[in-house]
Image 1 (cartoon, rainbow, N blue to C red):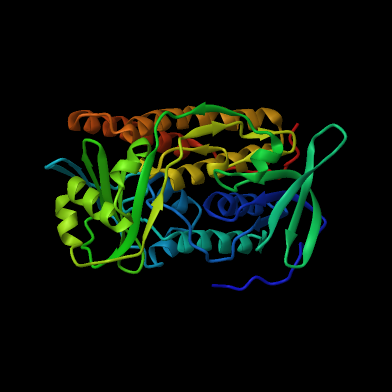
Image 2 (cartoon, one colour):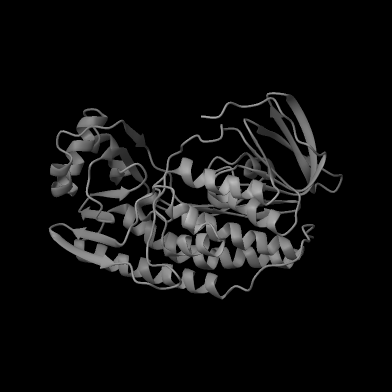
Length: 393
């Protein structure tokens, strides 16, 4: 873990200040810096800190890493290659191979310290300035109430920096969203509560998703020869389902949802982490002098493991919109984000409710697959971004 140095911003003015240096913020910073923008990224955490994640990159996310020139580094990071996906509905198992399409024939599920670090390094290589251990304390506004910069605090003390745009990539409890007054205009009905841990020694069978009425489980191959193994239940049933302590609850639900996987883990232990669940939402993603990307603007339940792919998609859409420098481009960013997100959000919400038969669960995954295909096709058709304008009306 890297210690936080007592450093401050090197400029008093930037084209963009981004709050959050994880997959959404670092990717946005990299793309803007590659366009020639002067970018400052601040993150309250230390460089290399891990975070809650499903890790899984879907085809769209891998395709973007390839387009950004980062796929070779990701493949060399030690993340296990994923060449098939297993869907188990009760005792019925379907194995789907990863077809060679869109320049992608292998998926990956890197640990976040690996993925976020790779993106942060790439942002710095492009010219962005990253400050870890620094938090946003407020937004600067002009007399017309337009955001004109940010107040930040770090080990060296407080600082004010001006910017054409302040971007919140600071997660579900986004300070930028709160300070900007970003409205929530779509909310899911369901959420899942999860217990997960990292287990060594499992064979790499790709992504494994298991479904039984009322519960799900899965195994995701990640770095260091480990799998992220999880169990989940509807959040409104977690008190009963997770009774008896975290370890006992994990083993009990795993045996119910994925008995074969449960036997594979017999005698193997890992530190287990709980997540209580958050319902999905869409927030207004931009306003005068500010914008949101990643979970700050759009979140859905992790049961479909699409969050990182969402973050990459919206980072690219926002960077393209900012390159044009017009309000219309930001409106288009919101429109396309919502058009691609709503089908994913609806089907994810239905899966998270666990109120389905096994045949219905399989049908929901057909819908999910179609929504992801549409997303990949739309992103593949986007023309290369150019221009450096960031001042949007």
